[in-house]
Length: 352
Image 1: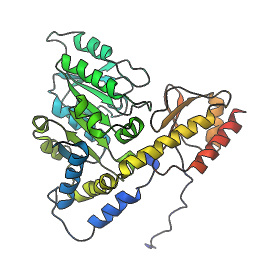
Image 2: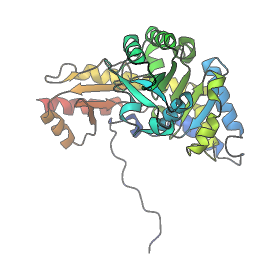
Image 3: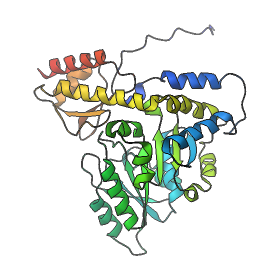
Image 4: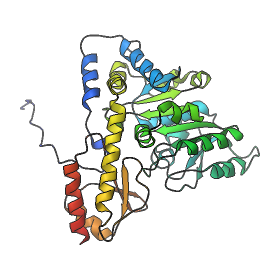
C-alpha cells in the first residue's frame, strides 16, 4: 500500500455560511508556533497559560478568574452548570444557542437545570420578559429561576447596547438572578459599540462571560471569565470531568496572547462587521430580497423566495436557513470584499 502523503484537494473559494469556515489568523498562528518551540509543563501549569490569563485581566481591568475550554458549547454549559443546582432554571431567549443548538448540554452538565424560554425580538430579551418568567410561578413544584443568560452579539446578529445590558442586569438582580453572557461573538459586539470589554461585562452587571475565540480567528478555544471569585469555585474540576482540561493547555492559551496583546481580537471583529454592513448595503436594492434584522455585527439574515435560494445553491454558494427560513451569511476576519461582490452579483442574477 502506498503510504505517501497525498496532495490535498484545491482549497475551495471563500464561502460565507459560517465564520467557522475561516482559518487561523496570523497573530494566533504566530503565538501557537512560538509555544511549540521546546517544552512546557502540562495541564495549564505553563507560562503561556499564565500570560494569556493575565492578558485577559488587563483587558477587562479586573482580577477575574480565567479558564480555557475547547468550544462554545462546553463554555456555556459548564458556566451555567457552575451557577445552578439541578433544581434551578435558566432564563434564555427563544433564539439562544443554549436553547436551540447545544443538544441539551446545559441541562446535561447541570444535572437537569431547566431552560425557561423567553420570547425575543431580533434575538434580544427584555427586562419585562425576565420579570414575567421570574414571577410566573414561585412554588416548590416549579424549577426555581436562578440565572439569566444573554448572547452578545445575538444569534440574529444584533447587539445589546450598554443601556440594554444594564437594564437586563438590573431586572435580573431585582429577582436575585445571576447574569451569564454567551460571548461567542463578543468581540463583534465590542467593535460595534466601541465599548470596552469591562464596560460590556462586569461594569454592567455581568457575572460570567464566555469569550469566543474560534469565530474570531483561533483554531479552537473559548475563555470562561468569572468576575466573582466565589462563582468560580471548583470550576477547574468541572472542566476536568467534562473532558475540557487540555493536557497541552499552552496550545489553547497561547493563541489568545497573540490576539489580545496585538489587538487583533478587535481588528478581526471590526473587519467582519464592516463586511457584513457592506454586503447588506449592496443587496438593499435587489428586488425580492430583504434583511430581517438589523445588521449590527457580522451576520446578515436575508429573506427571499425558495426559488432564489435554490438558484444560489446551484451556483455553489453555501448558507444556512435555520431561523425562519432566512438565509444567513456570516463574515469573518479574512472575508474578501471581492468575493462578497461575486456573491452580490450572483444574488442579483438569481433574483432577476
